[in-house]
Image (cartoon, rainbow, N blue to C red; front, side, top):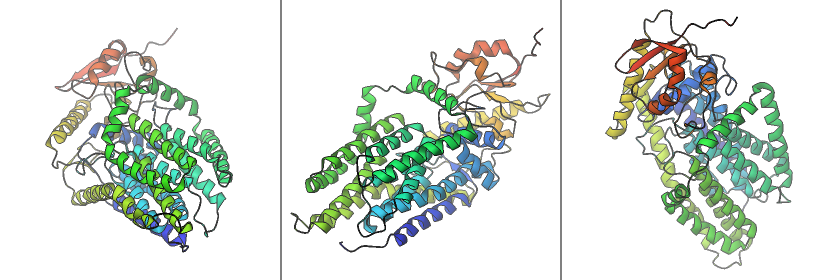
Amino acid sequence: MTSTRPTLPVAMLIVGFAGLCALVLALPRTTVTTIYVNDLLIFLDGAHRIASGQVPNRDFHTALGPLVSYIPGAGYWLSGTLGGALPGGMALSLFALAPAVAHILATRLRPVIALPFGAFLILVLAAPVNLGESIGSLSFAMFYNRIGWAALAALLVMYLRPLPGGAQRPALDAVCAAALTLAMLYTKATYGAVALGFLGFMLSDRRQRAWAGAAIVLTVMGGLIVEAFWRSSLAHVADLMLASRVSGARPLADLVEVLLRHLPDFAFFAMLTGLALWRTRSLRDAVFFAFCVVAGVLIANQNSQPWGIISLHAGAAVAAERLVRSQAYEPSAPSPRLAAGVPLLFLAIILPTLVHCLAALGLHTALAVKGAGESFGLKNLERIRLVRLWSPGEHGLAKAYLDSLRDGARALAGLEPEPTRVAVLDFANGLSAGLGLSPPRGDSAWLHWGRNVDGVHHIPPETLFGGVEVMMVPKWGVNHAPLFELYGPYVSQAFEPVRETAGWTVHRRRARVAAP
């Protein structure tokens, strides 16, 4: 345990594993889903908008960062099909984040801890399943949370000083920390805020102050460069503020529910960190472990995931490394054999999730290669498959939503003149991407009642639908009823019904009268 181990082989193994997972995801060029069809359509619509030349928050509203649209957009460009947009986008994310993750883990954790934790983070990124969902609940829904958790967990490991005996690379540390922070800021702001808070905390460590300060400077410079091209930061903040007014404040009961759902994780975390604090007697360690808990609970309380405070796993990795180091450099400390079993205890903490994500990734790949399930049926969505596994209730809802989407496509067929700039007065718009139509400008990437829109806080209809030519009003959907109650008067005033089916009413904008 006291011998110095080279970091390059460990880093190469982590990067190699990430590359393997990326290839497994991307090569079938097919998306398999069993649940959350409505969420999937958000990101397919985002990829379609990017391919159409639109810019997030400038041409359409979204409270999520621009990378949430550009990642599937890049996957669309890479694969040439919307079916490969999300698998390809996540493969590119793996290639982009893996070097930083590998450098951090290899320089701060021993191989016996770094390798399993690296595999854990890579699989959290790669597995097409929402954290806490069953293996059969395959979906790229909320993929941004998996990016945020993995990037944050890797960044938190930088609390540890580099392993003694290894080369000190503060410049590379700063670049990796800034890259992860920027990835979080432009994916989902809550993770980015926690990352910036952590970098500020690291300024209090005089031996790591140099890279932490440089990382903050690089993050600011990176943000300025992004803004020079994006030019939509203020619009993004406005969309964030609107969403926060709708769903930002969560009741205390939600926090208690998060704590109860994660009781086993908290028990393991308390066991490992308690042993570490017993050996180190470090107030600074205690503050760091508390940061992992508080920040993780606050983020989880904002997410739609049954389980998965990955900052606890990062804190456990740090605690395990601190325990092993305490034996290596204080052989006369009490209970020297304690640290020998620490890697096994840490492995027990991460192994269930590691195996779970590996199984979900393998299942998705097998189903994609086989071509299982039914195609979405729309022109541009042929390589997206809805599969029924062992959750009949979930499949029934997904199938009903998909059938409604197909009915909407049929309702648009044959309209003269050909429909363009189509909006859907419901959760998401899958028709523009599915039919290859020119998307409207000024509308929202999605409308989730109680999350980014409600009766008090919402975008005015003149702004939201000003660029819409055809309005699709469903008779069944996710939250169509409250949205129609809110925006129905404007729809009746600005649009006229031109076709009606069992599931939809198609409205076309009334002829605009030129101002005198």
